[in-house]
Length: 352
Image 1 (cartoon, rainbow, N blue to C red):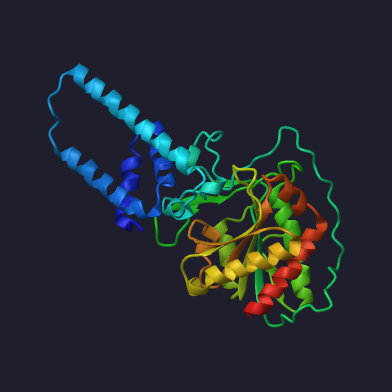
Image 2: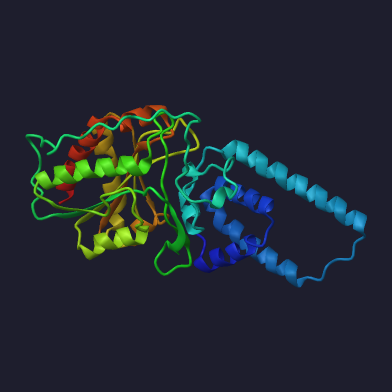
């Protein structure tokens, strides 16, 4: 992994580049194997500063133009070839170091800011068909073999909110990385359902079910029209001395074939050694319960809400991808929220 000082210098250099050149460089780095990135960044920095110190060679104008055109065409050709060979390879660790969203949620074709935009991306259809809201039975019924979670304090964060807050906040504690405080999330490709509404519905069902199992449960929000930053959501969990912090999400991806259950966990903090395997267990148990595929877990520092709550066991559960027709339909089935709640209760019991 590149050193922090190298990353800082590298960001300063690329911020000075023209937009098109910067995007090409980002694409090149995205597709490059992780093992080669540290060397590439280090060499790039050395080359940049050494060239600044060298006196400009005396060349005539025509020769300079020809050499520049040749170099530009060569670089573009190499980058495009690398892109074609590696376009399906995603490396989220590099994204997080530069404060970028995960590569699977980037839509550079429709985003004027390209690779540096907020996450997750939205992929609504031109004429979405709204799904009528179906009331969830209250109280939520308990399974006969439900676990006893008495004594546990659990904070649930329904991801996103109705109105985005584009003001920036510290993404990684102690670093200069910043991200938007809150976004509105994704939109169902067929249903037109909003992620911020779905996550609240799932969280309410989960809260009632876990309370039925004896746990003390706190929601970071109970309405859609709120303004609560990701740091503030994490602080609710840490200040409540929670045993578990569960963030509910339903993401989008530029590839509509991507579907399944995925869990993100912090790469730092007290539980970093076990977080990866625990996150994979959560993804597996939820996927099996709702009849989906498990995409396992990703240990990352790209999510502000996880970074600021790494002192407790924190999990960002992606129930599915609203950009996939199959997942969109599955997520919007009421029974899926209940099955997810039952699965999460079993996971918490196994980790208690």
